[in-house]
Image: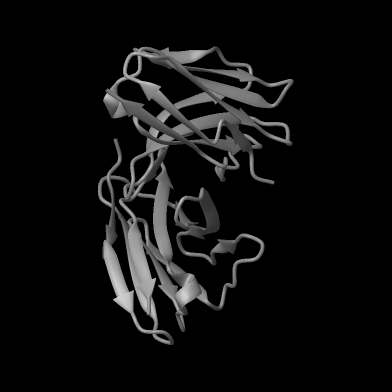
Length: 111
Length: 114
């Protein structure tokens, strides 16, 4: 079953913060986060592994709560370039490689 | 990072014809490639896992006779949509997994069936 993301869509002003959530009905080994611009391929942002630490770089970070089978992506001081649709991709077993993508969150940053 | 190319980037075909989409790994030998389909404003749905030198593994609900996958070499996988119909119109994206975790996606192929 496809992971559910929330919110479905959000509009922010430049400089504001956003949190995107990804919730799975299955136990997860890893969660991947991707951003996709319209008409383009998804671009890898980061991966969180079971038992691993919270990850982040610059103003984008993420957490993974294994017990709740949830992950959250945090965007701070958002920039116009952050606009796009964010997908979480979940992996059930190590080495399984198959990713099941979430429902997506459309983020629009306005000046 | 790994570079993945797809050809063509877009294609328009008539209903009933077949279309072949190529996915190439330009700087990495990929034993496994993935094919996804994405309808407008929807998420990516995994169609099949392409394995070099062996048969592809299809996800439930994906017709293997309609979506033919050939992974003839470590750098090339092809997806052929046979007897295409308008409902097959979609954005088809391939990806490879390099290393243990990260997947690299191709630029996608937009198929329109008229």
